[in-house]
Length: 228
Image (cartoon, rainbow, N blue to C red; front, side, top):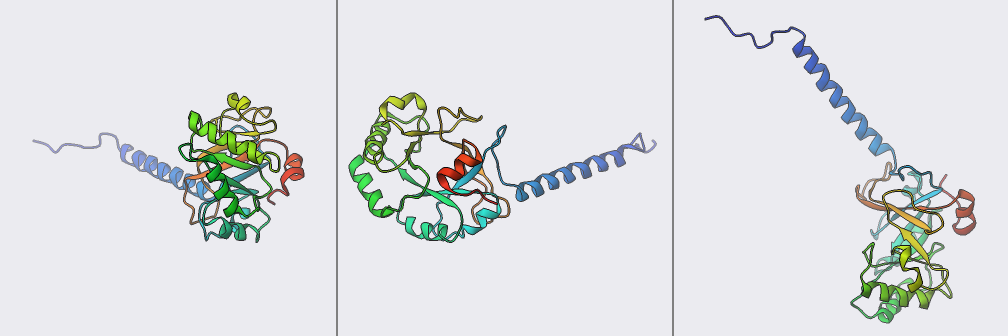
């Protein structure tokens, strides 16, 4: 009995090796581009992008090099430490009040005011319940806070614009759609929750990122300069 021939065609093995090498090269290229580029909105050119920063001791100056123009900071026990980091940069910042509908809205707002100590930042104060389509309890709590704050601060809520009648005149809305939202209905856009900032380690690759919906000139007039 003769020996079996595993490769009937001499070119088969070299072709497979070339294909494997090509796949490895593509993966390496994709990884290189991922680490060298900041996650930006798809299908839209935005004037400014920013990041939600929850770490207390993160060097925010590195975010400027990744092309970011602003950050949003949760108002909690680490708020002051993060704000001190922002002061060392040219980044604009805004404050996030994380709303819990099952708790007393007035008490939550009082605590946030104490922690922020009047330093809310240049960007709109963001009221966010963690729900893109909030429950009735969360809508009620955000509405109460918005009415309390809107006379002295620019306010934005994470809620669809269909709930506009529940909030005071002038209240802005955060878009959370997959595609670019209407500039007439929304102020900022949370375009990803899995964002990456080029060349910045220590924050992982699942970051909440925002884009300002407007022109560069509008952003500069309202909130400060863009990242260089």
